Amino acid sequence: MAEHRTRPVSRVKPATLFSSVAIGAVTASVAAAGGPAYAAPDYPSWSEIEQAKQNEQAKQAEIAKIEELLGGLRARAQEATEASMIAAEQHRNTLLERDEAQARAEQLGKQADEAAAVAEISRMRAGLVAAHLAKRADGGLTSELAFSGDPDGLLKQLGTASKLGEHSQALYDQALADKNSAEALGRQAEKATAERERLAKLAEEQAEASRVAAEASMAAVAEQEQRSAQLYEQLALLKDTTAELERQRAEGRALEAAEEAIRNAPPAPAPAPAPAPAPGDGGGAPAPAPNPPPNPAPPNQNAVETAIAFASAQLGKPYSSPGDSYNTWDCSGLTLAAYRAAGISIGTHSATNQYYTLAGRGKAISPRDVQRGDLLFWGGGGSYYHVAIYLGGGKILEAPDYGKTVRIWPVWGSPSAAARPAG
Image 1: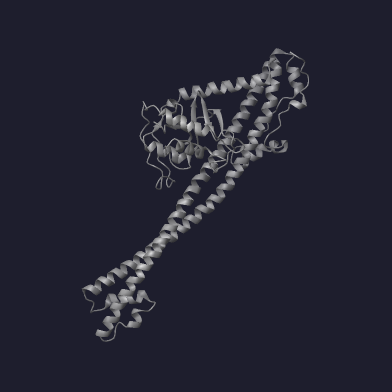
Image 2: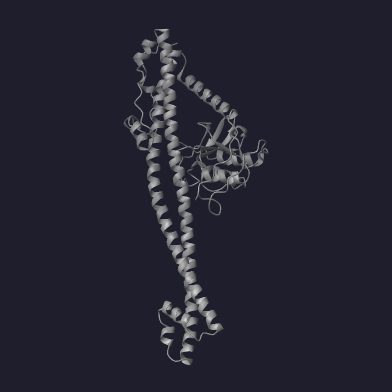
């Protein structure tokens, strides 16, 4: 092996997202996003690596330390990424609820206006009755009152008039009912408008929280990339290999661990009750399904490959939430569009809704039963913050998080649920 006494500056892999100053502030960023703060690890210097290489025991200790540091970087980056995903999913769901509230407010407002117009017609009819009675009876109701702008006074006097006939009574009852209906719809419209405004404000607050979490996630990933580049080179120097080989070994171990985790996943429990209210097809998330079937039907391969082909065509496109589902993607937007291309509806632009939509159709499966084309979900407790398409061999196709692009990646973390859209 060639002499490697000093680390060539030209081989430093620059951070692709943040300057070294921002990377140094990653701990504060993660804490600001709601994650735990970490003490800055003690990274080995190149002189320490050179010294450790002279003694086998010291070398092995340094190798173990570097591998522990690499694991810590992965864990912190994953934790920050998950926090960003959770914030983005909450924002997406609130946007869906806000839009539904907007539609409800508009519909109720229209109904209230229509009811008010009907009530006015009924009042005018009752006014004609009042005018007619005024001509036939002494005092009491007058035509001025009948056509005045005081519908409550008119209806009150009509209700107490002693000479109302059967037809007049029906007109009075209808006018009163129409008035009450218009007022009730007006109150409902006001409540729907207030709910829309509340959700709009909440969406703004969540957008800011999502931005902060995204910045923390990107900083953590940038730190992982920069620190890992040096650590892999130091590890290669200690083991007389190459940095690329050490990276490939680590990725291979991660892939093996992902496959093992999927094979050993426990049977999925019955889905937790869907959150309420939650956006869904026709309002609200579908009712939870029973336990996933022990022997689910195999997926339709034509539909699966169509969905995967669509998602694969998006590889390399940047993440954004909610993306425009053309040039930018988020996780549920990608899965929604992919299966829409295959002619299969899987719910709305929400990982939580997609799971409950499919579970409500009896398509929930255990993660250990996943096959190519199935969807994996991360989260639990009635809320799922990420969804990806399983490709087989421990790999997924996903739109992961800010600062990353649509990619093929080993299964990471612990997916808590799965579903088979094409089953």
